[in-house]
Image 1 (cartoon, one colour):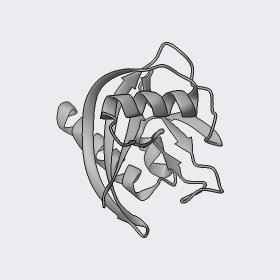
Image 2 (cartoon, rainbow, N blue to C red; image 1 turned 120 degrees about the horizontal axis):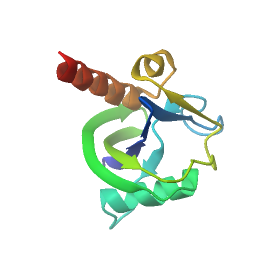
Image 3 (tube, rainbow, N blue to C red; image 1 turned 90 degrees about the vertical axis):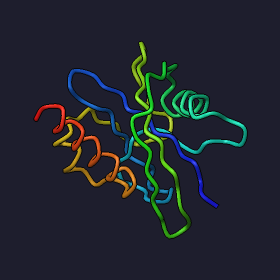
Image 4 (cartoon, rainbow, N blue to C red; image 1 turned 180 degrees about the vertical axis):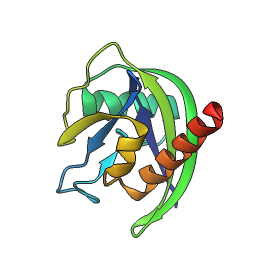
Length: 132
C-alpha cells in the first residue's frame, strides 16, 4: 500500500522553509518540507492545512500543487505531494527541532530526507528552465 504524504512549500524573500525532523522519528535529524500523512477521507488541501496547523501553528492558504513524486523507503512506498502555501502568521515549531529559511542552493547542502531531495531537485530544474 502506498502512503500519501503532503508537504508545504513556503516562500519568503526568495527563500523556502525547511524543518528538521525530531531525532526519535524515522529519518531523525534530516531536513524536510513541513507536512505529514494524508488521513483517510482527507483531500490534499485539507491534509496540508491540518498538518501545518499541528506542526507549525499556522493557518495556510493553498496556492497550487507544484509536484508529486513516489519514493520507496525501507518501510514502504510514499506518494509525496508538494503544495505551495502561504500564511500571514510566522511558523512556530511544535514538532520539528529546527527551522531554516534557505535559498535553493543552500537547501541542497542540507542533509535532506531522500524523498524531499527529489522534490528539491525538481524545483531547481523548474527554476532553471524559467530563467533559461
